[in-house]
View 1 (cartoon, rainbow, N blue to C red):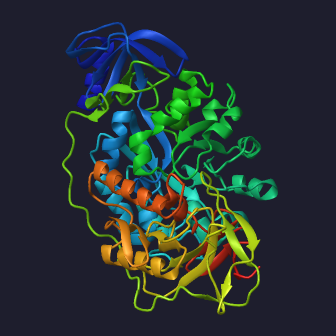
View 2: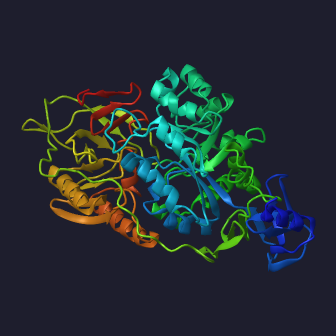
View 3: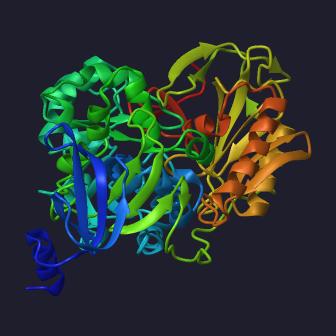
Length: 570
């Protein structure tokens, strides 16, 4: 028997003193649905006993405060925080998050296996437990150029890592439903392990086949009817509240005593300022409680439920043998942690990191930025006829396809400032192919200038939207010179720039500095006419060719419902 197990049993029996005793707390018992007074004894990184007081080397008086399990984010892309895993952890652990289940397909689309290994290495030994699902769709589809491709053999190798749970979101719904051999080799490699789904709007026979493939979860529901149909077919529902997509409140009506264990909270993609201003999973709990959900049920969605869905019996509740991830707070409705313990050690106090944290290490450059700005051609030539326009809605990833008559000058189709329809370009940046997809978008609310970035889900080519070609070219050149990032410009003047040298997706600068630079970018976007809270997040999803209805990649406009490239002209 391992010495740590021997000590755990001895402390549980009361034969030896605990390392730590949290005494006099109100236990948030997500297993029994009770709130009750209890002491929690910890030995090493495990909970040894819950109940009457016992001896301990260190005793902390909880003073009647609530003792909760550490919160779990059931699905997140760490890269969307724009910072390294260490900086992400420093932001979310003080908020009560102690475990995340991440899909590193953003960095994988840029740098392949090197990118995934970097995420695993960079998240080792943090107070935050970072569990990984192997990216299933790198690239997301054949309709965009990406920086890498991961095959079944590479994913099988990745699956041997102790922190890799299963297969990440299967976005290639046609491949799963129609039996694509390449995709199914990946599914078969993770048979019996968690298989995450990604099926926005899919229903009927195709959803039946998708469920038959063994899909465990879906985080793309936008309506109760969609969520209910998936629940009935055995697919667990992740209630998402991110920065670009906010569906939590719309989906709360699906919750009941019968369904709550099959639902969990997730953030998916959350930008730095959202993390700092609103919070992480704690924010989702507050939202749910504010909408009428009982506090204990809201906590359950962030603890017991995700642990059960993903087969994590060592966390998600405060009970003997579980990992000692504990949150101390004064008010379940407000959920502002007074202290957070990660694996039995103090990790945060009063909303700030505390205790022993690793030092920041210099991050490698992952992926090469190969945008050729010498032959940048953004003109759209053609007849004066209606074209397909991406109709985007803030707060949603789903877009519509609208036919519009665009202004036409000297044989060129140009943006329409009056209707707030901007030109959109996606430029391949990984291999120097010279591919540029061109189109138009309504919804970014620009009246002049341009904004752009190298964060363009999921291929992460360079995406830029603007009201004139000069401003758009200025953004592209600024991003190429910076090695990736986000930028805003008008004419030849760069208004704001946030360099993201780690794969064009992240920086190793502190989160506070990143938020400050993002503030400058948002202010610049407002100067360009946009009233959106975060137009860069909306922009980053306009190139995601697996979410309906119309998107743009470096290869052209994609009709997602038909899963094919379509011409610009309607």
